[in-house]
Image (tube, rainbow, N blue to C red; front, top):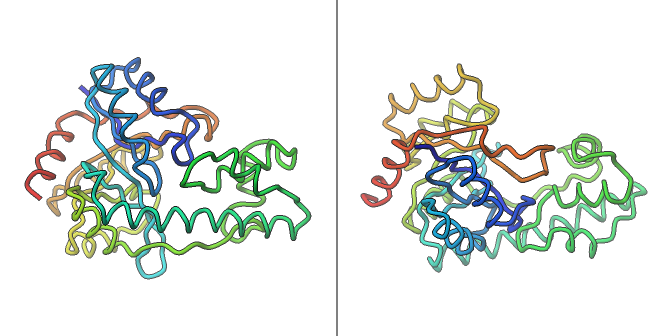
Length: 272
């Protein structure tokens, strides 16, 4: 039995619907999956229904962009109460921040001779939590870039003409928010963040786990974080970070988290 606990849909910057993700997960033989869209839990009810219909266990989730001492990292929340009022209030705030950032990115691109229409970008996004991939799609559609990789490399990465900063919450605030909503807080893809020095500190602030199994983690990196989890008493999670077709090919199926870790996550959420 296996799980994929890091999946995105078109409720944020993925291209698949919740139903399509659930169907693909079923076809790949997954026993459990989690939806971790960026700054929104709006897709969770549909994913829950789709999983129930297919006989797959569903775990509610969300991915939060956070910072610690000016450095950006991502925090995953699992087993969230998606009706928690504080959670929903904070998510609405950061969804508005995301929309404002898209407007700023379009303005910056226009200043560099790329006249994207904000209405078209938002039409492509068609969600309350738009992100850079939606601007990337507009750049490709408009013929300014050949593909999404080029869009990010030339225009959307930090320091490039279309990049714009956005307000993000601190890691400690995100951990507290996740706990307040009944969930467990997990650092996403620590091997990508390369911030091992903050893991102990965040653990002391209540962080519950690390995403050891990840698409871009080598075997050696995965083992490194498994050892760290054992040393610090942290939960182990894993997932593909599938965004549909945004990254050239669907990543779902590339990471299979042994189900024993799902049981531990559920137990930890109940205890908390």
